Length: 91
Image 1: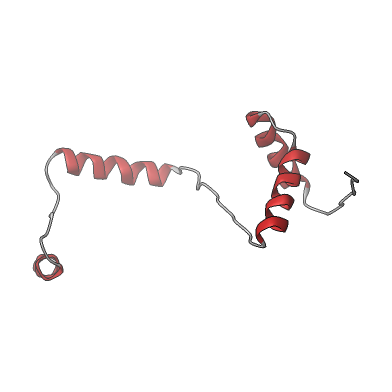
Image 2: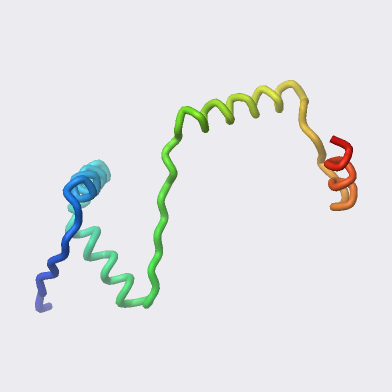
């Protein structure tokens, strides 16, 4: 297989983060980029998945929801959409 060099620019922070993540999972960054290019060439499609980092606000909202669930302060389940909307209108 003949190899080709691909050069592209990105900001230093993105490169550093990507290298750190690649190191965490034990795969060289160049291998990850190469795998991405193979997928792009093979499928003609682009896939992005990003996990949103947990923020302090999100943790507070989740904790509050878990307390409400534990206390039985939840609505439903509903048998029909009409039943659900009737309930929501009553709030």
